[in-house]
Image (cartoon, rainbow over all chains, first blue to last red; front, side):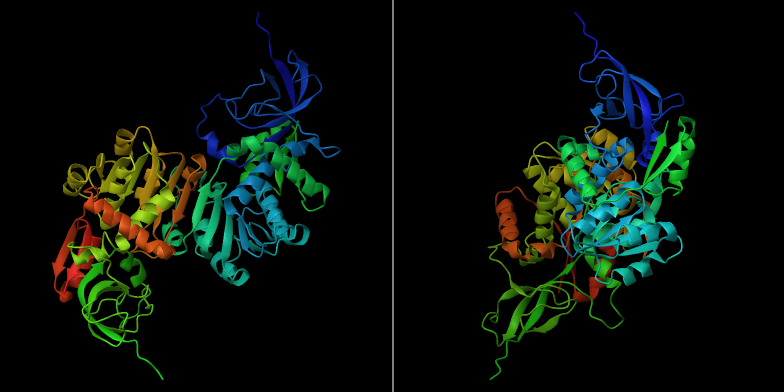
Length: 301
Length: 301
């Protein structure tokens, strides 16, 4: 006897993330675009996924999905949205989802920040960057955010408690770092790659740590070139590690619960840039890639 | 009462190393060029450094040096040459000195190789590269050396036991790696940086490790550009660490003794490219930077 485990899920919120740009080059015309969503189960033959339940599924850019509860082409198996009380369900894609765990594990496990150290974050006003900076403050670090507008920078400093911001479009990054961090940089959380990263790495202290989360500056080119970083790595005994957040799948709930706790304690703030309408996903995506967002980008169906 | 600790040392062998090129840009005209040497003490007021004793000193390119036994501008305090029996004294600059410890600690501590893994080494026929490859074989790895001539490559494979060599000047590195290492690369010991490293990193396996020892390809330019490596680091969860060998100063003798043991067991071979005459140091140095050497470059006074 064959028991069906299928259910039908209807998208409620869709996630829009920089990493999609990196993976999109692997897609062929006609393929479903990748990504995760918060969806509501509207039909079900699977007792683990009952009708009315909200889930996070890696279903791609789709409004309706038939799933058997297994892993998809794009990622993990669907997960029940954790109990987040009266907080918005969309947070399960952001600060209480993959984005939040990317910040939590990617920063703490790879940068291993210590009290009093100086932390630099690129794409600091994005969903992950703004979250990492706040964790760094919770851990007693000095935090410098590199971002693309003064408006975003002021949000980081005035609302989130960053110590400094640098506008890479209008400031001389090298000079600004010498001024903001004359003591040198101990941890660098990298979302961009390219020359911004090469310059930041020249300001690092001996035995500094670099967490490579994204390389947004290089996603549009097959062979992006930048100043090499190997000499900085040798001179300062630097350690650099890239990561995909799925490596911490077995600790997933730890990250969610800690971030939830920090939100409830008022230590972790978040912002969402929400676009209404499934048909506007592409615009939300390209706008984000050009830096039009603050915090997590969400499309509400 | 002031007791003099001075002694006079006369150079016997001088070391010629790629790292000197990196540091030379910090020197001003008239400065002594940096480097280490095996020297014989010919006068002494210091009982720890008696007349007739051979030492390794970081005295720079000099034939005669007055030292007080302390650290110098260029490195560690002078060390007594370890007891190496009937082996040549020049080895204290190479396989039984800084070069050997660079290979020993830089490879084992940062690449943490495991039996059956695949290791790629750039500048594989140099003093450090040829040594690293032999340690990798001792540890049960498959070893691929990237070098600049078939002659050197044949030495690596036929004499030192490397599994493959790739001539980066005549082979298509990307294609050759796919052929030599279809299983992917687990450890990369990097002496060159630049595009060679960017290409090798695209062939790495998940959780691969990269030890950044040198960046010879970039020493002649202030702002050398190459294809960025951050996307490879993310996609494959790579860990990369740069180092200066002095970080293992407190374990210095461990490296010397292990390398000496491997030499006596016939597991570790070495070659020296020796130039006679102090006045020929500059030529020996520039020849090495152009790949004219095999193994360790030494100038005999």
